[in-house]
Length: 129
View (cartoon, rainbow, N blue to C red):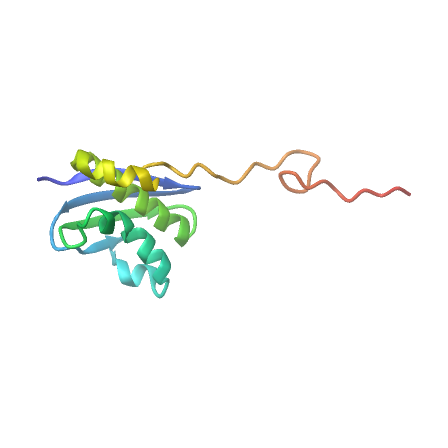
């Protein structure tokens, strides 16, 4: 099986993900996955969720490049990219990942600021006198 490419997105973060058969190493932006996320154990677990559900933790090497957003959004984009890559490899993986919502792009983004408002919806303070 050759390398498989997928793009994951979340908010303004984008992750380009290449999944290839290997020993289970994850490299993000040229850095080891553990060093990239530091002590954020819950976020690390969330990124590894598609691999854990399909029981492929030690079967694939993942190389990813992330950009935009913060580390949490980048991690979720990486999770989305890994899920899409696994689903394109095997139809059985798709059936496992779909019920957990891992193939759906989380489309919640920041609402734009409107004119006459302080933020997207916050109006200036009203003064009666």
